[in-house]
Amino acid sequence: MKLDHVGIAVSSIAETLPFYQKTLGLAVFHEESVAAQNVRVVFLKAGESSIELLEPTGEGAVAKFLRERGPGLHHVAFAAANLRAEMSRLAQAGAPPLEKEPRPGSRGHHVCFLHPKHAKGTLIELVGHD
Image 1 (spheres, one colour):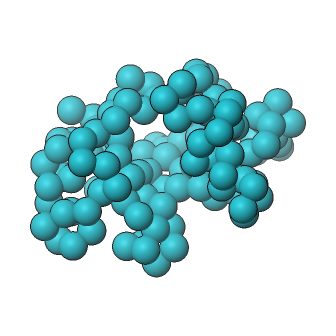
Image 2 (spheres, helix red, strand yellow):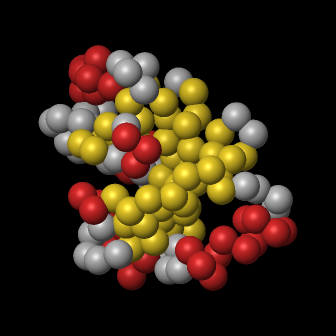
């Protein structure tokens, strides 16, 4: 699988973005609000991959993550050429996705997540590129 992006939970994109732009020299290439996940996201280009900053806009997984763990690495995302086929393959391999069906994500893609227990503590996201 190819790395799609690394998701970082932040309390404030406005306060965090200058570090990534000015200090690291990364450029924003996409911004949006994802109502289904109660987050505002900003993507920054980082070589062949990207960094996603996630700021909660209401109650949801990212808000809960920030309350319990504070800001930091939220997930690692991999591109899936055929998301449904990959979901099936993972379920058969003993690592079923949290969702039975892909759900809307950012940038017009559908996504699913694997429970952190399968990756020894890291939340894994699959991003459909089909």
